[in-house]
Amino acid sequence: MSNGGDVSLWRSRDFQVLLASQTLSALGDSFSFVAIPLLVLQATGSLVQMGVVTGLVGVSSVVTGVFAGYIADRANRRALLIGCDVARCVLYGIVPLVWLISPQVWLIYAVVPLAGAFAMQFQVTYVTVVPALVPPDQITRANGHLYSSYAVASVGGPMLAGIVSAALGPSAAVAVDAATFAASAAGLLLIRIRPTAGATAAAPVDSGRRALLRDFLAGVTFLWRHPVLRSLTVLLSLLLFITTGLTDLIIYYLKHDLGRSDNIVGYVLAAATLGSLLAASTVAPFRKRLGFGACWIGSWALCGVAIAGLGLTTSAIAVGALATVQLLATGWAGICSMSLRQEVTPQHLLGRVTSAFWTLHNSLGPIGAAALTGAAARYGVMATCVAGGAACVAIALAALATPIRQRRPEALQEAGALT
Image (cartoon, rainbow, N blue to C red):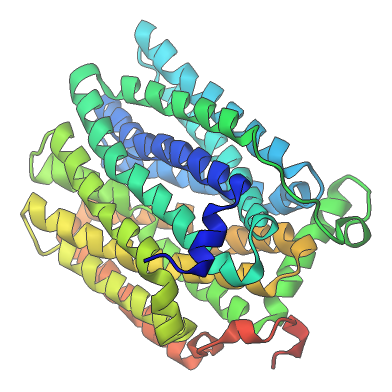
């Protein structure tokens, strides 16, 4: 049965439109989630090159993160979201057109990182929009619904991408990806977002590198002053070093080691995203009952166990089940983390704080993706997954010695009031 918070959210036209648009955008993300690695593998046959492409996307995200908050806190956020969707539509649309003439691997290296930059800008801006559409006490629930829509799209997306890829080739799946971004942009045209209170006073109008640096440092300073956000940033940097290349590893393991088809890859990844759906539907009561610290730490420890298990199975069904647990765990942790930032950060700073947070904690991701796939190519998927899973568990347990363990860090709204 829906409670009052759910009813209020469903009565918000803007929130409903945002939800529908993000479902379409998530469907496109889930297509590229499968199609791009398959396209690289088809063209090169190399796990290492799959990791390099993933790493380049991470580098572009980190670089974009330096100025994404600066833009999000000053620009028309709705127009910015639409522009990012249109840009990704065009970029991904180029790939299948060129592939009709002749496969060009260099195009993947050019297009995918650039699309990743627009994705980073979109994600930073998207986070700033949610508090402008829903009341503060409904942020976690709204994030759960939005994450749930992403999960629903992700259930069908990988499966459909696998089917399209098997029938028409990975480039055709990328074409579908481009079309979904166009549909998402059209939906976002219908949203009305409240102006950002305090943005003018808090964000002086100047330009150039000094302004970008000042804004980025404003976000970093806020993170540093907040003990929980500071600890989250450090530990997530280490966790993402381990997990950024995990999808490439799963796809390679299924295709190369287990000899499964593109269809099976799509089915396994589609089934795994049920974990994200379950996380989205349970995170609000889970966090309320256990508290932030237990939820976040327990989630990442469970994730580590699932990753280690991936290296110990030779069954595609078991791979799907363990990947489901992994996405369930990271879903819980991710929604809790994002909601906490939205709850404790002033609205006029949210873009800069989000940008700084993602830039810093993603900084090791590209290196990690290359290292993970390189290690798997040299030592095997089994040893790499077991070692990576053990490292995740160790990092999660280390959080017990930090302020992350607090039950309700959101209770203190001002970072300066925390000790």
